[in-house]
Amino acid sequence: MTAMITELTTDRLLLRQWRDDDLDAWAAMNADPEVREFFPEVLTREQADASLGWFRTDLAERGWGWWAIEVTATGEFIGMAGIDPVDEGVPFHGVEVGWRLARGAWGHGYATEAAGAVVRYGFEKLELREILAIAAAGNVRSHAVMRRIGMTRDPADDFDDPTVPAGPLRASVLYRIRNPHLFTAG
Image (tube, rainbow, N blue to C red; front, top):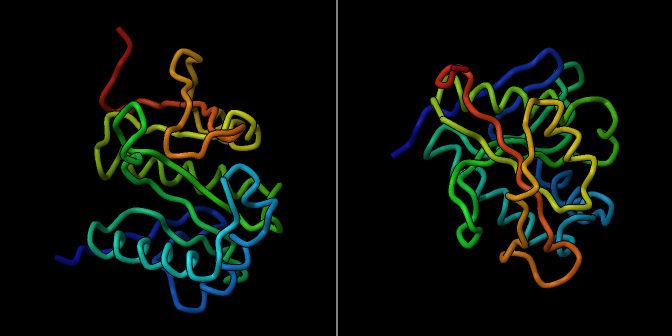
């Protein structure tokens, strides 16, 4: 079954379905050790191709998932952002928000802008009760994005990610944000 693929727009960004011409930039981005600093390894071209295929399929089947990010003013592909069910094997369930940008796109607020749009979509269109975000304990740039979009962290929720090989990247933090449309104070 094919769903209508949703595109998200912000003041500066378009989150859209992946195109064939994104592949070279996606592969180069995932071969960059700085971009992949908090992942176990850089991706080979074949791994990048495969991941792009999974993203396309999920978007086509569900209408949401991991979108390609393009700068509206230039049409430049700069990375990905989206929401997806958390990986099996972690000690909790839910839907997580995430992002990954090419190094040249860092420091412009794009990750915060894209992540905020994705969270709004998850709450307003999918009516999710809560959205999670997971990052390596040392990934302070991602932690800052999580806080800027209104997420909070309880250190008691931090965990060693069993989907990551043993080593310094296994220690992970968990941030959460609840749907303000479904929960009220009181």
